[in-house]
Amino acid sequence: MVLEEFLDFNHDEDADFFIRFLKSKGCPATKMRRDIYSESFAIRGEIGDMIAMLEEIAREEQSVSAEPPLDIDSLAALLSNSPVSSSEEPDASLIKSSINAYNLKLLKEKRDYVADIMARYTVGDKIASSEEIHAIYSPVAGEIRNDPGEEFFEESRQALILFGKFAWMKEHGLISIRQSGVTLLKKTDPKMIPAIQVIPTQDMYTEDMLDKHHVSLYRSIFLKTSTSVALDPPVHFIFSPKDIGEALVGLAVDEKNMERLFINMIFKQYLIGRITGIVKHAKTISREGILLEMRTERIENDWRDCPTEISASPDFVAGIITHMRKAKILTGSNEKIRLA
Image 1 (tube, rainbow, N blue to C red):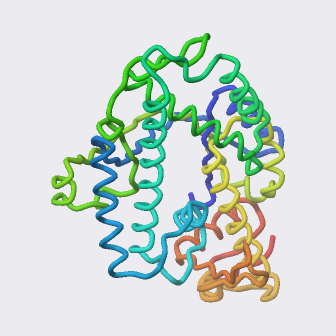
Image 2 (cartoon, one colour):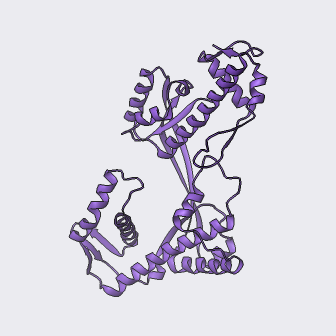
Image 3 (cartoon, helix red, strand yellow):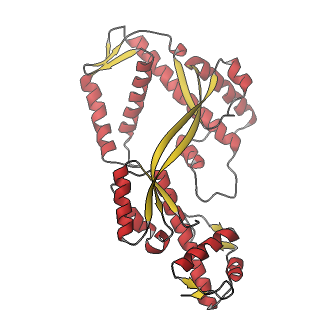
């Protein structure tokens, strides 16, 4: 059904609460279990080999392009799943060089951090006391509990990075982390520590380049069962996106999934309003006449500061008309549709 929506929840009790809210307003909804499959790709090898490979690739890219890599915020914005795509495709080579530059920066930071630890301390030394760890961790935990969103302080971000480095060193037996603090257990050449770096696609690097630097590619598969709520089509006739947003406050939902729901509601309700306007203006109109009018819609007010066109297939628009009839918004035969 073209107007049916889905929303994933982290907890069954939150899904049940949301369903009770929907039904109290006259909107049918059903809880269901959905199997979710996801995959990711990464490269792994000794950190010195991975750095050497990315440095070689960076030199090759610099020789053919004078455009500097994007910073991480610009890269994230470019890679985000924007609901309305730009007419211009992102520069694939710029994206690749920016990802390489960012991964190279992260790997060098890890290597240099370990190198500094190895130079400053001997085995058995405490590299961070319990007081120092607590001083770093407490504000970070507080910010997470308070759900800061975009207002995540720089010191908290740096603390999280530090704990990531500690976890990596602990995984490879270099340190122990206890209530008394962080202790150095052994020394090693930082370049020889194994590392993993996530990449967006399987074809980021050629097999020859990977083999040359003794770096391997691997795929990670993750399967889980999610609690999902199926919202029946009346959700579009009863609620605005704001209404749903207010009902979800305090509930543990998948944020990307929630944003997709809001976007679906915005555009589908726009189409519902447009169909209503067409029928109201014509007084009576055939279904084919509505489909002809709805071939391409341009939102008068730019959405998210971008001129936006909505293209919906005839089958999709016909499905909306069917649901509007069931909701008793429209009535009449396919040749003489009118407002109910």
